[in-house]
Image 1: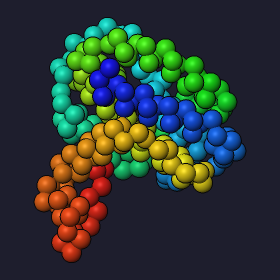
Image 2: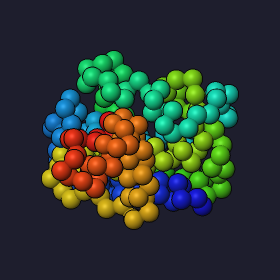
Image 3: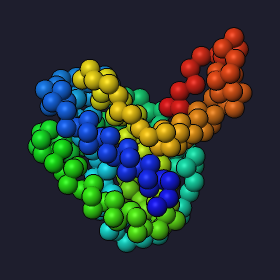
Image 4: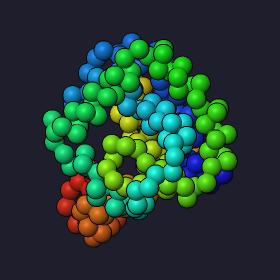
Length: 213
């Protein structure tokens, strides 16, 4: 199994553990740490990163061209969009709908899919093109798609943990490093290489945030 698949499954496991916590269920209807998001909606968004995989892998190989990770984010409409932009409203509404049956049902769905997904990914070709339909007219390789989902699980797992006052999920070192590498590449694309280098090594020359998004 490639590192991308191993890292994704590790991150998916931490999401399952987080969604099992009673603090998440107890705060389901409350606002989360993210503006305009409820805890339940954020939990739905977190679980979707895993639950989208079975259908995606069962679909026919897409005909759209395959692009690299940085090009994928350069094309993604949500990157840099305002909170109330149509794309972000649709993401929030879709996440709320995905979690509409409540915390126990969402956790059961996620826990049930993980063992089967582990077997499916172990046998999958990491270079196979895959595509989520709301992206636009392009595809990613499976391993690149999993890198994006691992990052989403790490970032939104922390968002959800902060929202309900529990410690953030701890990824294995390899998975954590893959997330940091992707975020660093995106930060350098957004702010420039020098800004990232200085922020990480020379506080006196750092110009401020180097957030990837």
